[in-house]
Length: 409
Image (tube, rainbow, N blue to C red):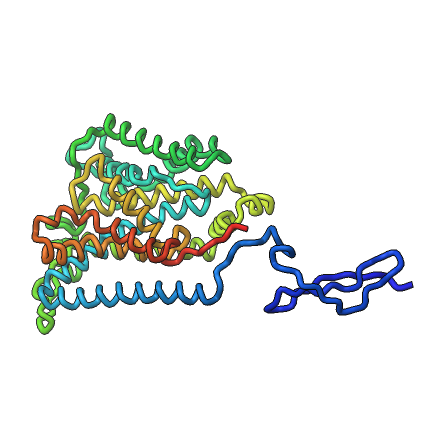
């Protein structure tokens, strides 16, 4: 007596399903009986209305054409701006890269917590402010800071960063851990509450007066003429290109170098360490990672601590360039979030690229082209340009530069 067997095999490129002999009490179907079954009947639960290959090619062609036009337009403008005033162009280029580097550090903090917890920490901006104030408090030697420590710059900044790490862990324990598993909007509101608390406590502790951090490279600093610096600035002269004495602040060079080190260290952290692999596992599937033994609570605390430390570093780096007050971090929070959106909110390289593009858009494009087009009075509107860039990018590619499209079944 033959044992009845049955199977289903889908022919590639068709909707035909071959059914083998089905079990029956007295009859057997001959082999090779083919029934035409439509996709809706065969797999109703998997219907996703995916676009055809032709529509995909058309969509990609439109996106590529749009990006090509944007790139060609930017290159043409850059050449024209360099020819018009090469000295100003080089100076603004350095300022734009440095500004983008700060934004990238803030965005990396967003990315760190997003990967580990799935939420956006909107207290990141006020943590930048807190880092700058802690740096001022730890290194103040003039008695301007309340209960200042008066430490050297290097040691004082390290102390400030260590305190920032601890504060990040405390925020995770107080504001995130009790709400784990709740709706995302509840946790996001909690991070906004943390931001308000930080700003209020800072106002009570140090007041709202503007502050400024010291730098080794500013005029009068110990390294004002270190290597290629002259009176705390980098001077660039390229006579045959029309660049004469373009000035880039030495602190901006420090920002670019430190950011490069931070980015490389973060890439190594995610790619080569157990912490990074576990964070990536949580980002892919939190519940599966937890069931496999990943210590979610510990990773969450470490992620908040590292993110807070990055925010503090951003505040310490930007402090010597400008006077700051309690509103310092708000702008960087918005720009850092925009950079994370541009990068795809999951890609480390895309996040850094988004930050640099935002910095170049604000400083280079807004500082040179905007006055050429709309006059010098338009300079006060250049802070809106990064958000215009974000809207343009997500209109062309909603998932960001390196984000992935996910389809729900």
